[in-house]
Amino acid sequence: MDAALTAELHRRGLAARPASSSAWLTARGHLNPLVRREAPDAVIDALDEVHAALGGDRRALSHLPDTPLRPSMAVGHQHVTVDDVGHLTSDRLVSLDHYPTTSALGFSLDAYRQLIEAWRQRAAAAFSRRWSPDFDFVGGRRARRAYEDAVRDLLTPVFTGLPLLRMASPDDDVAAVAESLGIRLAAVR
Picture 1 (cartoon, helix red, strand yellow):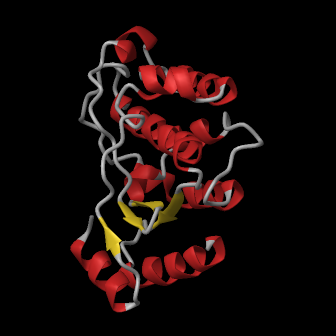
Picture 2: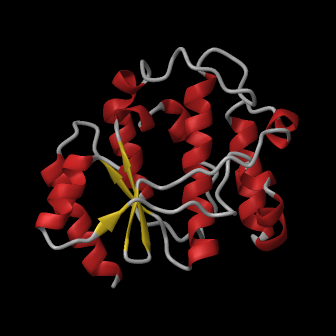
């Protein structure tokens, strides 16, 4: 969690803390045994579609360790993720197209799509040299990041009862994120 954002949130009376790891939120995503047992079929199917649409290798995903993934922070029981420009890729746009229409999301799909359109050229340079075993191709790390974002978005409401609040901060404007997060948290309480 970014220290500047934490300080700004605390200044505004929001007690943000690093989110703890959860057995259901791991690098194996929808192939995590707990997820396979507990999540609705529609969510598992959607995540399988996302993984495939992004060019993922299901077998490689099944062999990944259950390394924890985390949201950026928690405020009370609410999980929050703050996206820098590296999340606003064309791969992320592909992932959003496979979300079930009934998904409980803590952000607007239309607004997020518009944000991606505005920032995706700059975002394309992010993580271009990193590798991911289940996305074994040039740009595979960006695809992996889009998949992990989908995992967080679709599984958080299943396992916490609350949608993941996704905040975009492509220009790293801490004050704007803190203000927007305060408004959104007030709306969910």
